[in-house]
Picture 1: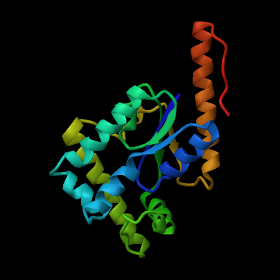
Picture 2 (picture 1 turned 30 degrees about the horizontal axis):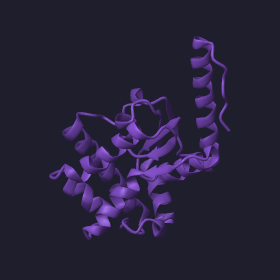
Picture 3 (picture 1 turned 90 degrees about the vertical axis):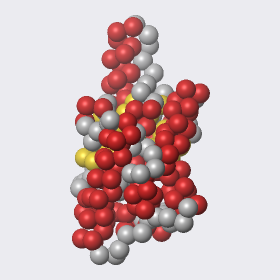
Length: 197
């Protein structure tokens, strides 16, 4: 089973993906982490790398090729990345939405965990940067791939986590939806259902 976690900046994609991978005892991969590393290697922030990506598509396509290959080679893992649902179409696709102001607050709380982040401490200014980041993502994905990653139709499960206090709550919703999917699949082919944690 492959689970892909997409979502807006600050929605907790990495936290949820790590939690799911730990519960399922499978590997965790982070496209955001790869792009953050790329930004730092170039002496850029993630927002500067995104701006560069609007002119140089290889900042996206290199990591996209990597995750496409993961989907071909490995059977069980959790991956967080905004386009992971597209490059691993057989994954169970989850999207996390969070209001930009709340997302900015969360990013500010944990920015020591992401050295590629460079948000001001002012919440309103940080929220504006988050909105701009979302717009940059949308432009790049539309230009490079003709995709709207915000379209709910792409996902098996869409969660608004703006008021969700703990990632464990989101994890339980993922497992519930996943078990419902597995049950529906087994009822159609007659195979026994295998529940996930």
